[in-house]
Amino acid sequence: MEKIAQKFLENQNLNKEEFVKLIRCAHDPEVRELLAERALELRKKYYGDKVYTRGLIEFTNYCKNNCYYCGIRRGNRNAKRYRLTEEEILACCENGYELGFRTFVLQGGEDPYYSDERMEHIIRRIKEKYPECAVTLSIGERSMESYQRFRKAGADRYLLRHETADETHYRTLHPEEMSLQNRMECLKNLKILGYQVGAGFMVGSPNQTEECLAEDLLFLKELEPQMVGIGPFIPHHDTAFAKEPAGSVELTLYLLSVIRILLPKVLLPATTALGTMDPRGREKGLAVGANVVMPNLSPVKNRKQYELYDNKICTGEEAAECRGCLSRRVESVGLHLVSDRGDAVE
Ligand code: SAM
Ligand code: FES
Figure 1 (tube, protein in one colour):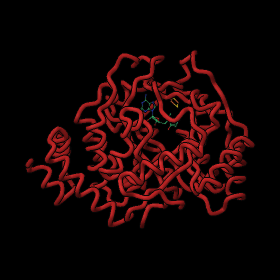
Figure 2 (cartoon, protein in one colour; figure 1 turned 60 degrees about the vertical axis):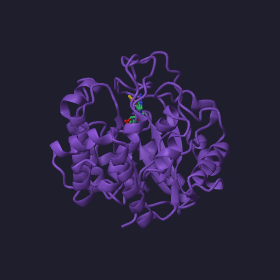
Figure 3 (cartoon, helix red, strand yellow; figure 1 turned 90 degrees about the vertical axis):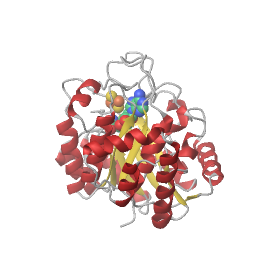
């Protein structure tokens, strides 16, 4: 048994070198099992057998950014663009509410069409109609003022993956006009405004090293977000990274356990990307410490157009099918999908 894993179980404040060593243990089945066991104990302690669900509404695939890994980056001329109207978004929520969802995640590219006023209007309408539901936004980097306006309008949570905490790595994934500093500033602002915040990163993105991942873990420990989204990088055929290998499922699963131990009360989704790389990827994620699933509530006619990477799953099903399918998958690993806002425990 690797000594470093034992040390990590006793005290999570490892330094960068130690985190690198811990990450290298991902190939050791004994260590994987040891950490998964602890991760499950911790999840059980704080969340029992409950798995929370969030209804994902991918409301626009227009984006002003040009992240090199992403299928809906502005430079992709082949992407067929769409925007949902306010009424369409409300209809997704209505459908979702009937299916038992109590959190709606509005996710999209960075689309200036959705001005602060438009976003406020959408958030207010959802909160008026479903006051007991949480509204989560995932619309990228905005000013402190915009975040404040959305918060006042009723938004509860915000997902903004930091993507990588390593400056050099960040530069290889994004064009010059974007900056890691701004992204981190956004995350800090969101925390100041009282959002429940989600950070995260792709596993196996091009040029990612074990040192980068160690930086990610140190950053998460410092930020202490309520949610962490990780999933394997998957190439998209219309991007510069089309020929790059996808991230590893095994390493993603290992990191899910590590993150559960690092931040025991964190909300940790078993992501669609994990389910895309392995038909039982999401179940496997739940079996090593994840406790959230995010079925798709977007209209079926638009699903394929929100193509961040190749072969994305769940693009043909109606929302009800998606929820039913996930509910069965959750039960298959002895857990239960609950109809609940699913806030992080204090
Ligand atoms: N525009 C918002 C933002 O940037 O935060 C939200 C939408 S963005 C498409 C959501 C997440 O998708 C990103 O944070 C990124 O980690 C993930 N993603 C993008 N391209 C991906 C790929 N090729 N493989 C796996 N995940 C990807
Ligand atoms: Fe904007 Fe991917 S580049 S959502």
